[in-house]
Amino acid sequence: MPKIIPFETVSPEEYALLEYVFDAVSKDTLSQIADKSIATGRKNHQLFIVSHHSKRYFVKIFHASKHAKWARRVELGLKDIFSSGAKRCFEGSAMLYRNEIPTAKPIGYFSMAALPWNKKSVAIFEAIENAKELQEYYLKQFSQFEVLFSKMAHYTKKMHDAHIRHTDIVLHNFLVQENNGMEELYLIDTDKVHYAGLSRISFLTKTFFDMHCLRRLEVNEEELLVFLKHYFGKECPSFWRKVLAFWSKKSR
Image 1 (cartoon, rainbow, N blue to C red):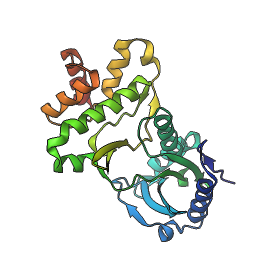
Image 2 (image 1 turned 120 degrees about the horizontal axis):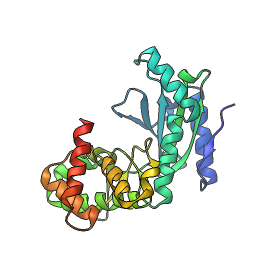
Image 3 (image 1 turned 90 degrees about the vertical axis):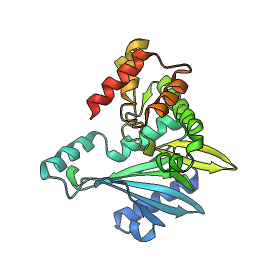
């Protein structure tokens, strides 16, 4: 019997939500009860918004893509024996949430399947209401880009100082929520979030691999310098700019 794994601070209402979603996924009726579905750009991910007890939640489903080659489906299935996509996403969000890095509050996760390569795993999070991707938002609010980039740099540095890496710091993985004229950022897409390993040995090794976490940050030179200035708390040393350029080149 598949097991529901709740976050440590869920309320009775949130646990009832987990059971509600579990029942809907097992009966393949989630799309019927969801408020809406959201495009993710990935064939093996589905994202829905579900209402329950007057609150809304993200429900993210991971599965082996029917469009993937059979060998790839088997590979993903075997990988999920040890850690499902939902578990990785949930645990990544939990790491950020516990370290007070704004993200969607994790509620719980579960997996179900007859065979590993047919596994369907589901992670549930509290919805971030009325939010837009940073990439879309700052194009309309360009005059405020330094404020937004400074917040993005602050949360990224706070995450790295806690020895956590996201590995995919890009504009569309930050959501902007306006509240009484203030903008709050939330870091999402957490299935690759992990604790740093041996690179914690020294400042040099740690920072070298922290720069790897930023390798896909595709912004112009002015924006990058603003981000790095706020990340380091001073003008970024040329050495670390070269390290970031090295990682960015390798990622292409």
